Image (cartoon, rainbow, N blue to C red; front, top):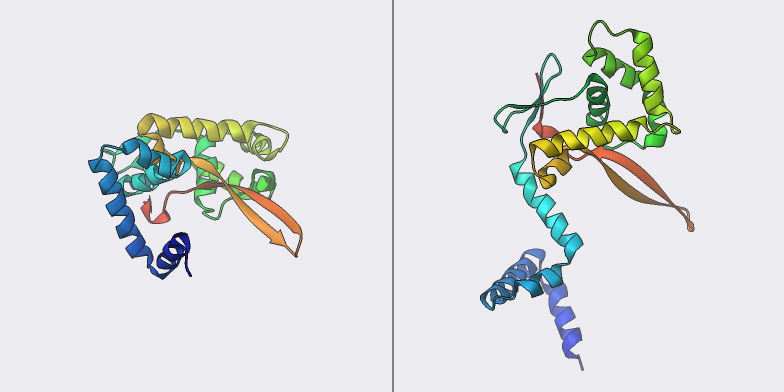
Length: 203
């Protein structure tokens, strides 16, 4: 004989995702009619609520235009320019070109690419030795330069939009869990720009 909980579980297993979403909508609507928003928030939990807010912001993202002279323009935000120093632009272009993400400790493998980007965005008066010195600091795991540059990029986007939309444009953390064999577990701590690449427009 099935208990009520087992019967409920069986019904859920037989329902499609769309049907479950429909049931959830009905339950949320019923709680709203009873003015029990507190119970809805309690059921969702803060982490999920934050995730939902970020996902909702996805529909309001602006295209990011990279102009021929390497200015960053938020086309759907009244053509607002993202003002960054050359070194910040070089870092941003590197991560923009690697949607799969990069671990900070692996930045040394991207030294030549980072130098190339820096040379593209740097003023002509800037000497190559200055560029190389700056890049060497960025890829040095004992130097905090890369964290400082990412923090600055984050602040600039937060000045232009709310935190949920900004989370798609900034260089943020993404941890991937890997299992090697039967017992060894290791984590890849990537830094990524989550902005969908179809929203990046290169002139």
